[in-house]
Image (cartoon, rainbow, N blue to C red):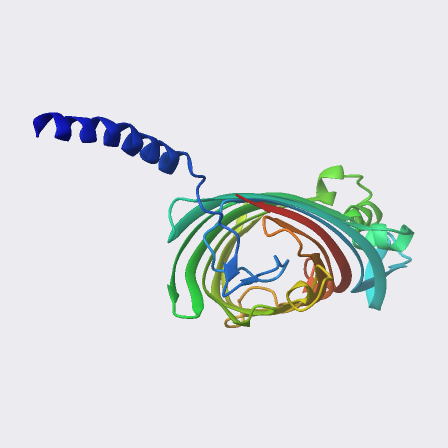
Length: 321
């Protein structure tokens, strides 16, 4: 009997060891943003609640118009510069986004983001009145979530720091005319903001072809201009997106996206109002790749008093592990 047991044990142990080795070698499950058979398209405007291991590259191009003061020189000794109404100025923009996020487990992920940004006037009057604005920002985020039946939810905490450098040609020209002093330093404005943005995020897929996502968040910003504290600003942010995957109902691996986002100030000293509307087209044949283009319209303020609107296009590539 002992010999029989030993023979069975000798045969079972290698099989168990092989099975354990196969289990260990199985790849970790993908962190693709999938719910009820629907893979959610990445959006410029809306966050999804899924905890992901992912890298994203976004390249944005924009062209817009800003309304700003129109200046005239009044003769005298010394001459003076006065504002006489307003004028429309054109500008172009370019931005890059790099984001990496890592899923620690099924309910928690964290990530980092790098953002570069440029606005610049594109003709003579616009270069003088708008100048140029260059920014390089960095941010970090934590995302904790849970699935409640057919709805995926998460709480997202974003923190970012954004130093920006504005080249204000008009300010230097005004001082040169009125004071007779050419001061290049008066043309440089440094702005540094620290932003905290906690938000609640939810996604729902009523059908495999259709996905809905909504965000509701709070924005807090601490702002310094030329090393002088301007104060604290706050606001509310709402965003929503709907995407449809034609690959779920046909042989066409194309998805369409529509999104909206509004950031609105709280109180008279709140953050600047920003409103976005966008539509996108995405390749959906492979779950691990988010590849697409998003085009939209944005209403915002480059800096007071330059109220602006812009048409933009973002090309994005995202990979999920």
